Amino acid sequence: MKTKTLKQDKVNVITLGCSKNLVDSEDLITQLKGNDFKVAHDSNEEDANIVIINTCGFIDLAKEESVNTILEYADIKMQGGIEKLYVTGCLSERYKQNLEKEIPEVDAYFGTLELPGLLAKLNADYKHELIGERVTTTPQHFAYLKISEGCNRTCSFCAIPLMRGKHISQPIELLVKQAQNLARMGVKELMLIAQELTYYGLDIYKQRALPKLLHALADVEGIEWIRLHYAYPSKFPKEIFDVMAERKEICNYLDIPLQHANDDVLKRMRRQITQAETRELIDYARQKVPGIAIRTTLLVGHPGESEEEFQDLCEFVEDMKFERVGVFQYSHEESTIAHDFEDDVPAEIKSERANAIMEIQQDISFDKNLEKIGQTLRVLFDRKEGEHFVGRTEFDSPEVDNEVLVNAKDNYVRIGDFANVKITKAEEYDLFGDLVK
Image (cartoon, rainbow, N blue to C red; front, side, top):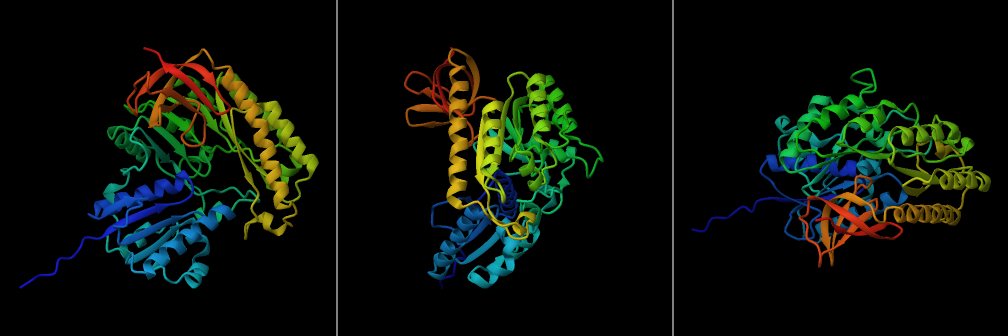
C-alpha cells in the first residue's frame, strides 16, 4: 500500500524598501527557521509554496513597486504556482482595508508590528528566546542593527509615523546581546539604523542615550566598525562627536537627513531647525571630528517651494560641500500635514531640481575623490565583481555611497577582510587603487 508523503513547506520572503524593512524580514526568517521552516530570501527559484511580501509604503514609487509585486505573486497563486500568499510591512499597515478589497487573492495582510500574528497564521510559535538573535541576509561581514522603532516627529511630508507608530527604543543590554551574536557570526561592521537615531533612549532612559549605547557596542569583541544612520539634526546630542573622536570603532561617518536649507521651507516642513543652526552643527562636527564624512538627504518640490527657495538650497549644497548626498522628490502622501497643501510644484520641475542638486554634488564628490589620490586608506571588501575586488572605506555605507575598486588580476583579498589600499585613480563616485603589501 502506498503512503502519501507530505511535502515540507518552504517560504520565500520578499523584502522591499529600506534597511529597516530588511531587519524586519531577517527577524521573520529567524522565527520561521526556529520553527523548522525551510526559508529563502528574495529567491528567484520556484520551489517555495508560501510567499511573504514585506512591503514599503514610503513614497509613490515605493508603493507602486509594492503593489506590483503583490499583483505579480497573486497572479502566480491563481495559476497554482504557490499555495499561500501573505503581505506585511508598511504598505499593509497603512492601506490594509483597501488592499483586502482590491487584491483579495492575498490570504492575509499584517501590519508592521504583527509578527506574532503572521507566525500564528503559519502555525508557528513566536519564540521569545530568539529575541536578540537574527539570521542575516547581508554579506557575512556586515549587518544592520535597528536600535529603535517608530518616530515621534511631525514632519509635514512624512508618513512614517502613520506606518511605524511612536518611538520605541530597544534596551542597551538587548542591543549588546544582538551585537555579540552578530560578531560570533563573523560580522565586523554594524550599521545602526532607526527612524530617528538621536532620539534613542528618551522614552526608556529619560535622556538621549546614544553616546552610552555607542560605548557599549564599541566594547563588543569582533566589531570593528560602527556606522550611524538617520540622525535628526534638531537638538542633536553633540556628545556623539566626543564618542566618535574617542572610540576607533565608531566610523567617522554620519548620515543626517537635512531635507532642506531654506528657512521658510524648513518651517513648512516642520523640521524645528534653521539654516544657521544647521551650519553651526555641521561646522561643529567637522571641528570635533576632522575628516568626518557627512551624508545627507534632501527633499525637493515640497508644496510651496519657490525657485528662489530652491536656489537657496543649491547655494547651501555648494557651500557646505557634503561628502555624500541623496535627493528625494516630494510625494503627496495622504494623512500627512503637507497633504492639506496644494501639491503645486509640477513633476517635471521636481525632477529637474533633483537632477540639478545631484549635478552640483557630482562635481563636489569628484573634487573630494581627487584629493584622495596618493593616500592609503583602510578598506573593507564586500564582493568581487568582474575584474575587480570592490570595497568601502569607513566613509562609505553599502549600496548608497562610494566604492573602492582593486584590480583582481594584480591583487588578491578575501571578501570580508580589511586591507590597506593606495589610491591611484579617482572618478566621481569611485576610487581605484592597489593593495599595500
